[in-house]
Length: 266
Image (cartoon, rainbow, N blue to C red; front, side):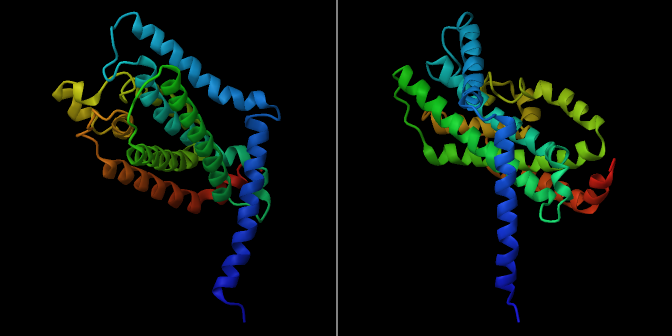
């Protein structure tokens, strides 16, 4: 008689193998086989930060927090891109891996997990390289609060997983949703605190802005990078609640409808 633990072990090995195969496939298509593909993952945010820093330095003497424009905008831009990049990849996971999902050993959960793990690791490496690079290049002496930085990353990753999973169902079932979401997402970059401090916003607008979970992610990240920033309005619980609700809804809808999504157009 086979014990439940042996059965779970047998199931977990093919799952891990399928996820690894999907990660390797994703690495080959997303970054290519040459080092230049991975280099662009770092160069793209570097160029964006250089542009933002130069532009705002022409109009302002100093950033809203600290003394270095590059570090201030990196503390907002990088966590935003963690969310946007990972959620976008998860949102198109089924469509991207649809041919492979015909195999019995590969599930839609494997496809989403593979994209999450690869892109989360990539974003983590890019964050460390850029933040440490800026600190070293400009000779800054910031006392980094690593637990708060890790908390902000966990908030960004969980929110990306939840929103991405829900969007995975919506984009797979209603292709027009991808365009609608893209349009809705454009003002989010301007309204998430990348360019400003949340506690510097007028109180009437701040009450509405508080419901944007990315504001909490970015403000928590800045509290981890700048010792003088207390982020008193930040609520990690709210961000994790939004992440859990969207993840639950997305998984529920995908489990109910994934067969019809995969058979569509077959």
